[in-house]
Length: 227
Picture 1 (tube, rainbow, N blue to C red):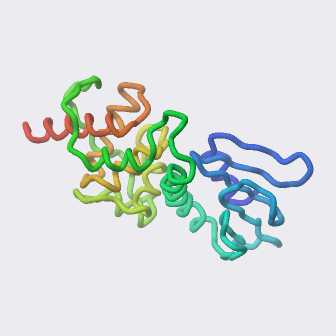
Picture 2: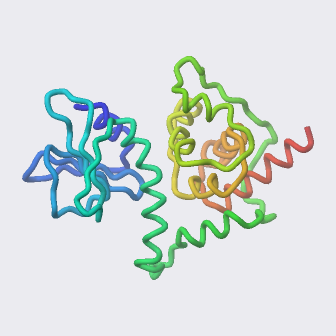
Picture 3: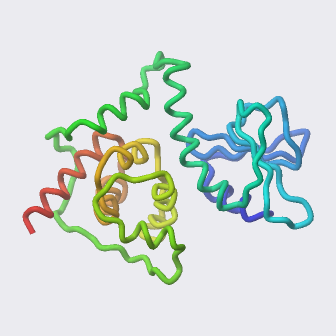
């Protein structure tokens, strides 16, 4: 099993094994990734990855509707690409499919994330803020940069590092679409998103939504202003 396959095994929400070939489909959030020893012209996968032969470290990669164009990437480059691909897919789907299923579209989520937070209170918060417990000596340069991040909006590379950092902080680190949108629209530090995640996911056992993220942000902002 390659490094990439090991990563996908632990990150995927579901795994599908093809019946007639050696292909494996990993579903990570809204992204379907096909890992195989060959490409397929008839697949619904968003990302196709051909495993390297003879123990190599470079994978041949192509995206859905990529007009047959291929890239040669290592495992880290592929992992870093999953998060932006998820956002791109989310932004494209409402335009193509609409929102007839009643779910809020990514475009609407972005609009709400850009608006000021509401005053509604639904989350329990004891007023105690935490500090990071991650040891920098075991971190990558990107993770170290994220740990020291001050108030600013987040880029895709920074967001991609959050899941592994939160797994070290809390033992879990799922970063859904709402968190990604919130971070790209909000000027916020690592310490702030760390506490927001703790309030919503760890303390209140809730799934992060734009509304809850805004509420938690207001709670910690009020707490910091009173210190």
